[in-house]
Length: 599
Image (cartoon, rainbow, N blue to C red; front, side, top):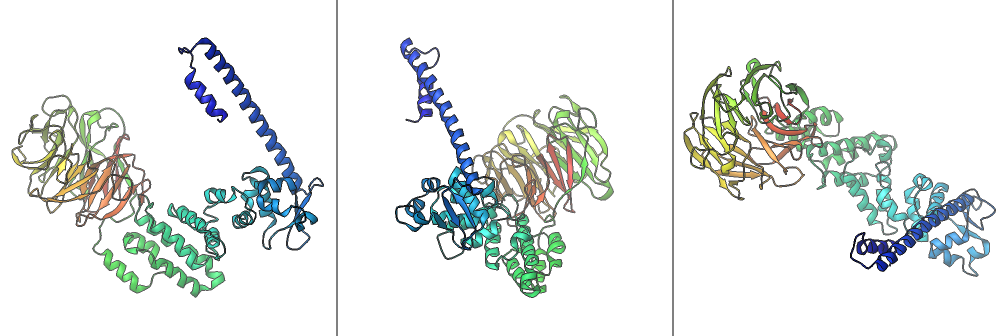
């Protein structure tokens, strides 16, 4: 039994205050004290042994007279010294060499294979003497260390190289080494592809110079075809394109401009350029010279039917000051809504923490008006959550803590309210997201009743969509809702479903988008939703801290906006989202007290 296992067992069986007889407890304490002493002795022995091994390694590297073996290079003169006993303790191959009568035993020398550098032998000896990597191993050529490990069967070197030796600077050399016919090195190739699958932006021109095209193709494909591509989709394609550019530029001098460019074009041929936004194609792909006119025309024709939201988003403006009080936004910024265009465009932001809704001018970023105060009376809120502008400009606000919806005119004056708690048609239980259809019906996520209701602007019942459950047409506490120009209704099914459901205006189920997970097209906690000018489905996910955009026609994932997305934006906890006709996104950030405009 190991010392630590015995100590753990005694800790479990003989605790202070246990019912064990005193003599047994006393014996256990003595045993634990003895074990502690053994541990201290072992630690001291290991430290002393390490010090001795390092001292002997220094003797070898400095060619001390205390060494009794020479490791001779292929010129027959250059050598590094070592200790026969250390070599034999590390490897059966060395033990065989130094048996009585062998040439190595007679001459006291081991011939190093041609092509192995002095630094790699120093790194190899570091492993032989200490059993681990250090400064000498880190400076060695990993390929040569691998060969020495194969030749002399020294354990640990190959495992270390596979775990820590594949870096952005060494990956290409390592992959080409894995393709040499001699030896079984498929595990090196696998380790290189695994490293590449997590990103290839750090593989610079120095690492790519002299690398064969076939090796470059395989490493690039490991990234752009990887299931581990992460939240980004088109960003991974852009990574691949920039990798191809670097390979081309690195290999122009040795190969010549024409051959290098042809190789770069073959690399680019492996990429689905149709996934890139038009903005990236124009700025990066077209000027490069790696895509001919015919293929560019095909890509642009394909992109002609693509989404206005397939751009690289960045924060252009922030709305709201963080704080408590009139005209400020609390940490609880929730759902948002847009109304109008141009100079008259307005942004409504529900702020449950401050019990009001703020209306901003999109053009200036200023607060136009504040709607509501804390309370239960007309025009007051306990927890305003959903906001929607009617086609005629009135503001509708849901208050799930009062099971009602209130209506205000364009100046923020209270007009009316409707709704009461209950499960019947027209009754509400924790209403959250709201939106208007083109025909003027109000869509309400009736969260507590696990359904969506369509109501007239006065609150009278029209129809119900969905019911409680786990199927495609069911909900568990639906969250945000949005409506497209064609009347399609999008509902965030955040609990249990981890996705969004799409219905037509008549309430017929169309499709579900998403599943649980962290990859493209998957969700953790989808809440706010919007429908873009070309029918795009846009979904906020405060669990993943990103916003994803999908094709409204097919449900295809178009891009992710977030810290690790196609558009790299830090969104905190995005909760609500709205989109205008220009494709600009307005995202309410829970916990930060503001709304960001992305363009």
